[in-house]
Length: 282
Length: 130
Image (cartoon, rainbow over all chains, first blue to last red; front, side, top):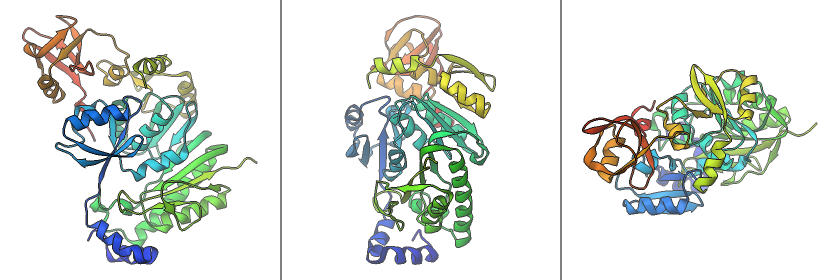
């Protein structure tokens, strides 16, 4: 079992009768998904090309496919190297979709590496406007992914997000977290304890405050984590509300413990939490 | 999105900027943000030869050499191109863009006597990841 006893107890409490289903799902490998880079190719065309190579794909969204069968590694095809798609869990598309960035806007991706959401933002913005992507580590991976996907509207800073001073139209805060929603993909995180959750929550609140200070009035912030822990999710959103944010209804899964937020349990994809917040005009 | 539209979008990126000693192409809007936030790690389109970013965003202009499927795979593993793998060519010497039979750019090469030497290929994104 990939979850320790401490975590299992929590999930049993939150899931109730669905806990058994959760346990069954956790024993299976996590399905793989690809996001088509519509800046470079049409989904239909990519599907045709990969199916010719023996891949079996199932459409789950206009530009997202579930990989049902892969004769070779899905991350080693010519199409991958040409930047025609990104390996990205279905659930992790929803933070960007909720932010709904428009061409011409100035958007901040606060914790951007390795660039899945940054390149998704660029795709929705049709490579227009500006994305500021910051991270303290893995910026080389971020930059390589930006280049491979043919993205041209990104500025990358290897910088702690808390040091940034600017007024953005929209902000994506996909915060560093304990990652308990992706244990099926990254089992190195199995030893998560309450003190780890508390530590992550404290950093997330600091980042939330930074986001508030750097967001234009009327601007939108999407907060997300791949953690299942309420201290890293609903508790951080409650803190955001105390700063002055207003909560808007997010889409992408079942309602979280706080009305309007979204919780995606790791049944068919990674676990995720999403909240959409707006800084009101004074 | 049609290739024509993509080219139009990329043509909007016209301002050259040096970042950490390297050449990049950025928009006016990006330049304004950089003025406030300071020198970044990277921005816009990386232009230093042999930039694959510049290649796939149609910022470079070299003659093309089209190769067969087998040579495509080998080239993406960092290997050179044997002349017998060439399907069609627009030049016999100097620096060229290596394309697959569909015309998609895979990287840069330089003509030698018996082969085209691999200068840079898209496979580096896998080989050099963090």
